[in-house]
Structure formats: structure tokens, C-alpha cells
Length: 445
Image (cartoon, rainbow, N blue to C red; front, side, top):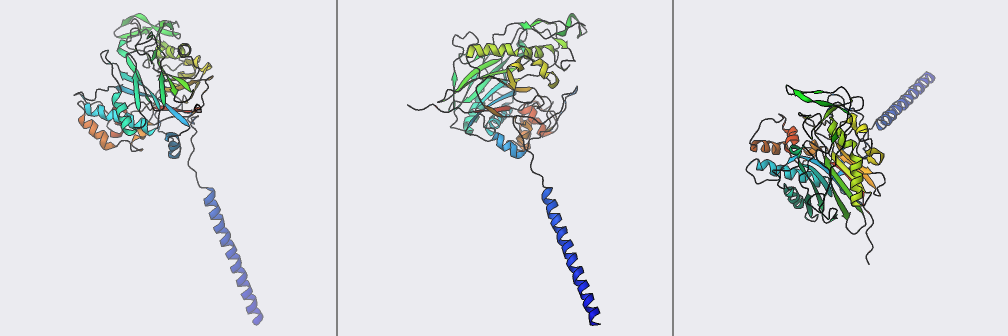
């Protein structure tokens, strides 16, 4: 009897111990599984773009995919670098005191300044600065707001003459450069004022050149519609808006660089493709996106010659070309085939920089940054700032956008989604940026 009780007790203890071992093993396995499945935030390398989307016949609209942690690294100030930017600021009119939409103009200037400041930029090229009736349209309000945000920066600006090619007076614009005069000197590169009226800006002399081969419109336009030749030919063309350059020198160093800023012809074949100076054709869709017209493609194709001209005039290989090119993704490689032999495209051709009509979508990869391969500067951290992020980053709000709409004289033709009005009230382009490593300061005597 005692022996039977003893055996049963031993069996119970053995079973209990074995169950405990199984339980502990199970707990350990659950902990290990949970640890293994933890997901780290995605990383973002500024020099590359992981997007593989294609620019198909109909523009796609994709949301921004930059992680918050990566954004903070890109946007913050780095004392070892200076930051260069480019931005199409959408029909900018600096007349904030005019009776027409003065509230909206004041808001826009403030938002442009806040965006530039948030990204800690030091030099920014601006295009689509309105030319007005051949009178100067400055960017003084943007500069004033920037200096209110950072009084030590001593922001200043320089604005070009009205630029346009033959037959393209309706597309005339000015190019502006704003920069921190606390960091940079702007150098005189047009001493004889042979290329524009400003000794500190160089406007391309805009000679005629051969277009890309295209199917050009015939001389007669029937019922408002053009008919096109069935053979590829070329025409003599020039830039619809000639590029403009400025040269900067980092104070107390020997570091110099040139920024050439441009805004190519509008995308697609224009409405009057047989007019003098506006001859434009449909392009070979096996080489180019058919939504591009021959004019903007010809400007891209000629850009190496233009950059060689600027390099010769400014005496440095540290040349940046930054532009709203209106070149579709599919057209990129063939359009810039000559420029790419000597210049590196720093921002991916798949990086969509224009704002889509729907909030948080981006449509076309028009805005580009190139740097000469033989340049002596170290460049890094190339990115676009997704402009729809202004709300997420608390630089503006739906309430502010609603106030702008309420003060608009004309409230029609705007998106129903108030957040999407960023595209209407600020810009339809995201700004793009690149950082330049600072040179060592000169030794003090």
C-alpha cells in the first residue's frame, strides 16, 4: 500500500515538472518570436530614390513615402554643409499691397518663406516670378519674411530682367535668387552688362539651334486644329525662356559655384504650332513621351551647349543646373543625352515633384538638379520637400487655407478639398534641395 502511494506521488511530481518545462519553453518561444518580428522605421538614402514607378500615358499620382525620421535628418541644419534649393513658385506676384487678393499674396509670401526656412536652405533659385508689364516684380516680401524668421541670416535677393525667346513674349518670366548674405558673396559675372542689365546675373545669349527631329505642323491650320507632317524634320529654335546664372562664393573660403536656373517651355505641343518662333512638332514616341512637344525636348537636348557657355563665362567647373524642365520621365534619358555625358542628375528621374490635384499626391518628375561631373564640390542629401506635408509639419492649417479662400475675389476653379488648395495658393511644385560640403576657412593672417 505504501509502495503504491509512493509510486503515484513520483508520477505526479514527474508530470508536474514536465508541464512546467513545456510552459517555460512556450513562454520563451513567444518572447523570442515577438522580438524577431519588431519592425524598424524605413530608412531613406538622399542620393537615391527607391521609387520604380513609371510615367505612363496618363500621369500617375503617388503619395509621398519619406519617413519622419529621415525627413528630420534631411531638413535640419548641418553646420558642415550649405544647402542649395530650387523652386517654381507658381505665377508669383509680389504686389502684396494691391487691392486684388492682397490677403492671398501676403499668405503665399509667408508660406514660401516658412517652407524655405523649415528646410534650412541658404541659397534658392526661384522661377515663375511674374514679369508684369515689363516692370520689375521683386521677391521682397519673401525676403522680408525670411529675415523675420532668422534675423542673423541677412537674406537678400537679386532678380533678372524679363526673359523670353522669339515669339514667346507671352511666356516671359523673371528668375530670382535669394541667399543668406551672412554666408555668401554674390560675384560679378556680367561686368559689361552684355547679357542682361544686372552685372551679377548672366542671361543666356539664346542663339538659334537645331530642334530634335519631330513631325512639325504644316503651314495651314484647319478649323483650329493643326495637321502634322509624316516625316521627321528639324527646325531652328531657341529657348522659350533663356536660362539665367548667378555665381556665389562662401565667405572666408575659396569655395565658389554657379547656379543656372531655368523654366523650360510648357509641356506638349502649343496651340499655334506654325507661328513664327513657336514652331513645334509631335515627337517620335519610341524615343520620347508623346505628351512632350519638340520645344521643351529641344531645350533639354541643347542644355550641354548652354552649360558650356556659362562655364566659359564664369570660369569654374562647379556648375549646377536646376530647372523646372517639363520633361516627362520616359523622355528624360534621350532628352538629356548630351548633358548627361558631362553632368550627373542628382535627383531621380522617377521622383515626382509636381503636386497632383488630389491632396498628398504627386504627378510628374519635372524639377531636376544636375551637377558637373568634374566639379570639385562634395554634394549630398538631395531631396524634394513634399509640399503637401505643410499641414503635417504644422507650417499651415486647414483653417488658414479656408481664410485665404474666403478672402479670394474669385472662389471658383479650386479643388473642393481644402488641403489640396496648397497647390493653388502656394505652388503646384515641391521645392528640391542639395547640400554642399563646406570648404575649410582661409587661415587668418
